[in-house]
Amino acid sequence: MTVKSSSALETKKLAGVVVLKILRAPTKKNKAFIIKLNGELGAGKTTFTQGFAKALGVSHHITSPTFVIMRRYGLKKNKKYENLYHIDAYRMKRLKEMHPLNIKEVLTNPKNIVLVEWAKNIEGSLLRGSASIKFAHGKTENERVISTSLLK
Image 1 (spheres, rainbow, N blue to C red):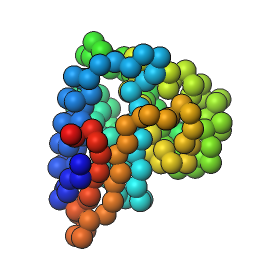
Image 2: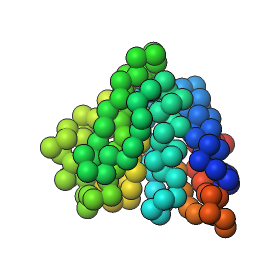
Image 3: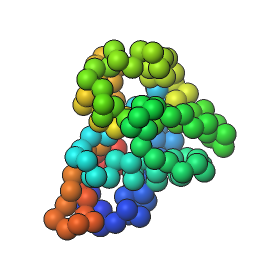
Image 4: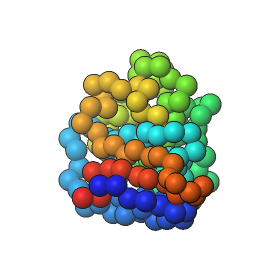
């Protein structure tokens, strides 16, 4: 499904809709709920993540972890998931580079939700079968085109 967003607020609201779908879906065994976020610079990946985190009850200000690569946010109010991980793989060339961050444990824990910006840079067996959202610039300055099967 493809949706057009005309503002950052609309993109954040869309993220809230995705959160509701995930919370209603069955938990995956031996795997975190992983969402691969791909698209051009400035296309809305971090804005989506901000809305996603807020919908899960995260009160921290969310910024892209470009230089620290990964951030963890505890989900105290959620009974299904314990952690939200936000990963920015922009500077990565392969998943192996993330092993010092215990990435395998993060991606295989069914109590985690993991959002991976620039996931195409680290595609591998641990990301196979994960949900995917593609972001693109629209025709106007604030318009974004967001494609995902999570909204069906």
